[in-house]
Length: 236
Ligand code: APR
Image (cartoon, rainbow, N blue to C red; front, side, top):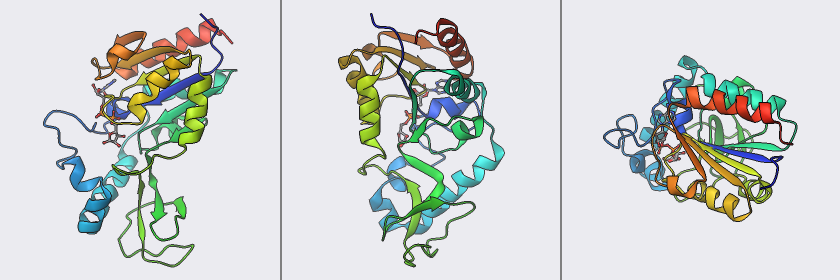
């Protein structure tokens, strides 16, 4: 088995659950009272822009009420102290990784605190509500939408992610149900390329059987323990 130098970490909604942000596939299958298809597809945005904007405005406003938890802080510590290559790929659109201090980070499903111009593709930081009539600062069109990757759209930075997975010695998946591709397939890519694989989740996910090791429990407990182990071993 090869030494660990390159680490890729995939995070999902379970990582932010202990901060008070609802996961997607909780009891009842509703996300904050909505079916995901009603608020998280290009069709939903075209059909009812007010609803989609209002929904994401509420999610953005919620960020002011929450704080990074012990799992975000532990991953930020790993990012700072790990001397080898490391990439955190998050499916989360909150800003808790960066508020905890993580820098080697990709938001593959977009960011609540960003607006995307559907006309010219400009992306820029956004605070507060985003009314549908807001004008793009780059092209002037009234075409701003939440910078969220909807179902059916291409996630961000896939080339960089695939490159990191191909080089990974260790792939760790934290707090994700493994229900949404392409992220759900990262474990297979990493394994195929020779990485060790570890899952940290509250309960077995849909893809648990794909991992070399699985540990079950709350991220706020599992992640700091795992980070301590990795930093103590320092197998660079
Ligand atoms: N600690 C660890 N894991 C947890 C915790 C916790 N405290 N609480 C919940 N979990 C686990 C759940 O058991 C579940 O397996 O986190 C997982 C969350 O799964 P989902 O709600 O499906 O979230 P995620 O996997 O991030 O969803 C992927 O789906 O709708 C899309 O784009 C959206 O990025 C999202 C994608």
